[in-house]
Image (cartoon, rainbow, N blue to C red; front, side, top):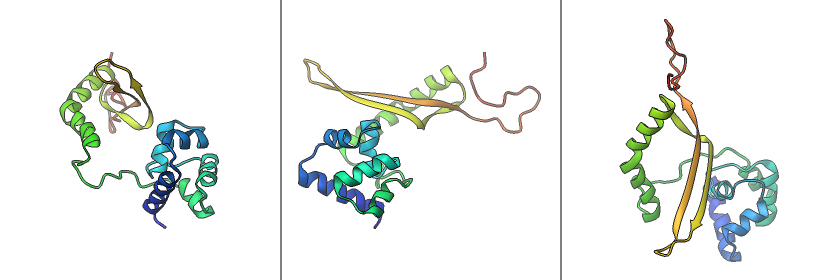
Length: 162
């Protein structure tokens, strides 16, 4: 079985049982609801305890449980740019604001990137009388580039210089 097949199986069971992601997240527990959903969709791995709970919830085999605990091949969007309108809007945000985010982050922190590995994300519904809003909070560790071969007092990393 491929990981994509397991993802489809989980989605089929979710659909068949009429479960919500919130229900699945509460049953598995122990992690961010976003991370649990991403793991069920094949983009993250579950620690063994959560893989065990997911296997019990979905009625999975031992091999399928182990697959939930394996590091996945991440990046499931097959077509770029993405064609799903909701996902495309995130792509559009990067196209429009990506250079701005890069400039502002590097001006504040130095020469580096925001990690998507050492990362937190939350999502919430924000009531608004003109139509509810989706509020996303992304928080990634700053990772400076290493200046290898540095000499003559050149700093080892690209942190913002005082």
